[in-house]
Picture 1 (cartoon, rainbow, N blue to C red):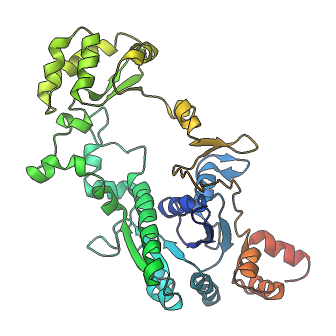
Picture 2 (cartoon, one colour):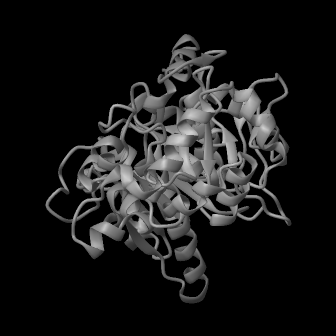
Picture 3 (cartoon, rainbow, N blue to C red):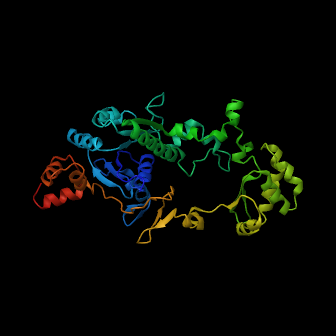
Length: 402
């Protein structure tokens, strides 16, 4: 696979960092998840579980190895430094300043490994007036102005279903890490990556900035093309209280739809720009689509050259034949469903390892294989509390070895 032999040390928690390293693990990278003392990665306990394992955790940590350390102790940090000295990549997502306090910052690790690629993912980045503000995805969307254009049916800002800041930071972070690895081939020099969720969202909004940049005013959301101002780029309710989407505003689509309806007179209303001029067409669609159930319109549009879609619920979505064909929903040997690999290579495609690490499951394997520790040295690390694994400690105590 494309990332075979790449060694990743993942210090991150929750969603952005684990998603980034999950994408790498699916392409063959050896990802060591360094989990804190106590209960480890928080998303082990978030959301519904299958066979005692959180669905959230299994879809962000499959194929990784777990090492549990208490980075607040000097001995644990020394061990983490040894792993970083042998790693290609380190990912962290602490609040700015925490990695430095733990002696796990880029400045701490780069002297041990000049070729290290180190990425810090955070809400607002490592500089600026918000650097010490606590925040997850929703707060960064609020500060960036993104929530103001994500309106519910009541016209008020609504929490988005996709955590955009988290996921954009993860995917842009993956791009940045791979850029740095590519450059390292020529220079031998690693690099430090400062990636902010807030920055990532703004970078992905060039199609939303017309009014903001040209007029220096906020957009009137209901009149904007991508937020409902365009009759042919909109969501409409059907008779059975479900919804359908017209999803492309090019004029040949408008002509195809309105001609089939026998309403060629409304075609000029769909000419750009979006806004009040298009209201007659929007009103017609609202009235017309409300006369029949969603399935009727699915059938009606089958022979129409238009960007149409039913609004499915998420269960229907994961059962969609397109996603199944593309293996974006896959099943393990026990029939449990998982999110697939979105990056499709022709040669050396990624491969899912469905195994999910237990907390500290790979302590001995990592210390023996990566750092050449003996079994006695590892036993002493457990005794000192340098490495942690509750079940292992219980076993050693029962055997009289601790």
